[in-house]
Amino acid sequence: MKNLDQDLQEAYDQKMIREKIVIHLAGLEDRLSKQTKALALLEIQINKSADAIEALENLAAQPLRKIFIKILGDKKQQVERERQNYLMYILRHQEEKKKIAVNKYQLDILQKKLISLRNVDATFKKLLLNKKQQLKHRNKDLAKKIIHIETNIRADQSMRKEIKEAVDAGLVANKELNKLKKALLVMGPWQSQISSAHASTLSYKQKNFINNLLAEISKVNGKLDNFIQELSDVSTHYQLNYDQFVDRISEFLEEFYDGLITDWVLHKEIKMTIHLIDDTISKVKRILFMLKNDAKKSVEAEAADRAILQKLLLDHKI
Image (tube, rainbow, N blue to C red; front, side):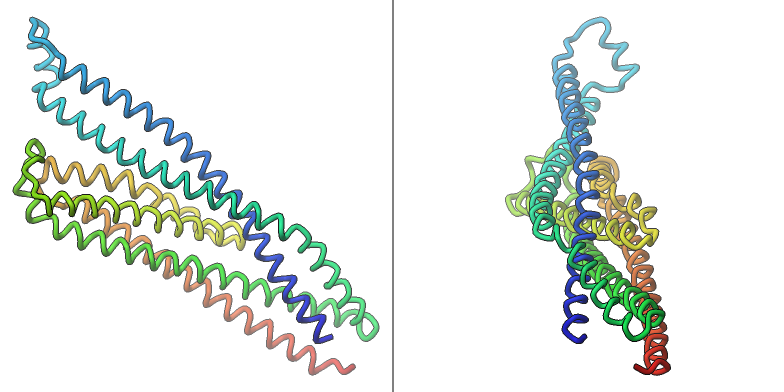
């Protein structure tokens, strides 16, 4: 019986891995579909913005020019605004391409892993039936109760494992968000001294800093995406309602670039962007608190099941 129990536990663990992969693949395919559409839209916006810049820069002096100025404002201001939009679309396009590449690679790996686990359901069912048959010879009703309780215990353990993965991903995301915030606070003092029209006055050190900042932004976006994936897996697999919180952090990158460019051009200080980071960190913390609370409930549920199982085994003699 001991070897059977061990084989059954191993088969159950493999079964849970397979279920998680199936859920994760469905989530990845959905995200890839949305990301592909978003990439196509960004390409349209980039082309439109480039055309608008060219049209504004080639606007010749003519009687209608005064009308344009009245309606649209100064041509230089219009060109500058369109350049800012163009920059934001380009940055978002680059990040979207990176996310798609990472998700496609992950999709390929998971599909191969899923093939290797194609027989786990049949194996688990066979082992479960074997145990049930052995227990039938002793006590049919007891067998059903034991198997039901042990299944609940395994489900609680599996859920906590996935919750821990989501918590770990959230902690990493917040760590990177804090690093990004510190980097922006460093940039703040010298950024306010430079107008957007004189970016060429940036020193080599400042330009290098901006390059490193863009790399950190990309890293933050990747870690948040990982957190969202883990959160989605937990929500789907165990009917824990975290989907409502995913939307609140999934648009971070778009809002970040928009806020950063607005800060640079209008506020002359890093203000909106810092607020966005603080708000996102707070949202992640709230989600982590809820995850940990669900894990705690799972521990309590498992303890209750183990107490029931122990009493059952003590009360029923073979």
